[in-house]
Length: 189
Image (tube, rainbow, N blue to C red):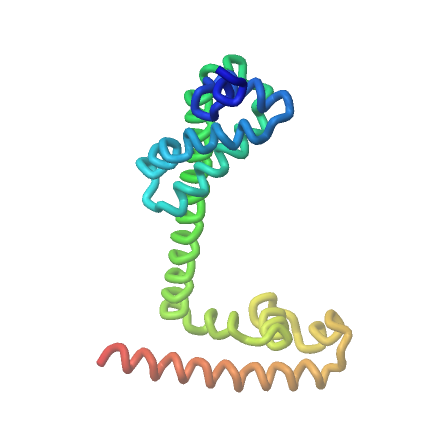
């Protein structure tokens, strides 16, 4: 038997491929990937809803295995070790998906609460929708109780600017509240 027949790719054990890979032969690790690519994909696909996610998980597991190959204590147990890595990858993917789903649900709930607030508190919703310049003056005047002169001093602007800004803010608020009133009537009908 010549040396080529002895080193035929599928004739070597996992342990031999691992040892050869550790000694600087990435080609031997590629042969391990070829050997376990399908079974690992099947393992991942059985735990995920998406073939694309399963493929990504399997690839990530192989990359982590290659990077950590020197940590493998029992080279003959490569496949079991690889499945352990894949399990950790799957858990991480599941947690990330779960976290994104929770964040999405929280954002949707917040949007729903804001829409409900606009119906329950139309004036507050209208003030919140004002441009910053107008909103700041309205808040200082009516929520914090400052006089127009105090607001002018606080903002370092002339008194006339404060009164003009308040006047424009009132006009915008009236328009927004009229629109809310019309929408409320249409929803009741």
